[in-house]
Length: 253
Image (cartoon, rainbow, N blue to C red; front, side, top):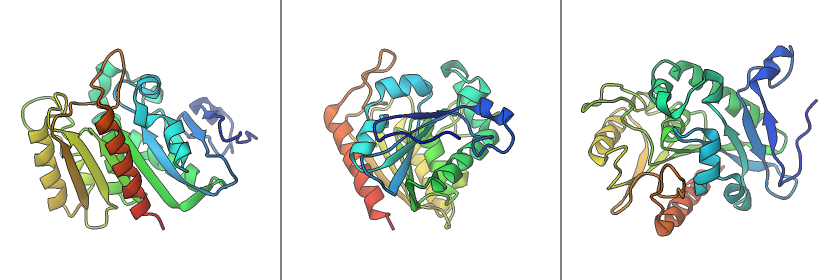
């Protein structure tokens, strides 16, 4: 049996554990787990990486990092939803098409595992996603499997081309959905704001409960100091984290 470690430690579960029948993590994609100091149970946030992949996101995206959430009192489950499918930044669009249904199941399994964790309060499960991960935070909240979700510069136009052809993540939303906080930059050159606002209207038309905020001067990945994407804005980074934290607290049971 794998024991969970101390508050500052990480637990890695790998998909290769599926070779061991009966293991609780048999079908789980690789994920990292960390906890605040104390015994818990803690509310939990599922952090969902960008199209840069798990390792780059963990290195460069400040508000993705487990420590910021642990310091705020949340346990963190951080799945790598690219690894099992051999996805890379170049093949990122397959996330939303070829592997979409597989990733849906894999992330729902992460929710189940988190809720069964004795150090987690199963009544209070949240998700925050960054770019690609924002799509999946919308899925988890849109399907009503978590208390609330937050999409930071999230993917709302999940296809190439001028028009929105792929109906997801908008199709995930209904009157039964959990609330979503969608934060976006007016100058986002990756997920352009006119497409994003069109998608928000679509999601609301399906019954989705969206709270939205646009940062007037922000580009994509405002909390990144990365080699491949650096649109760092410390004020937006802080505001986005605080807005998300307040949103989750507002939906805590």
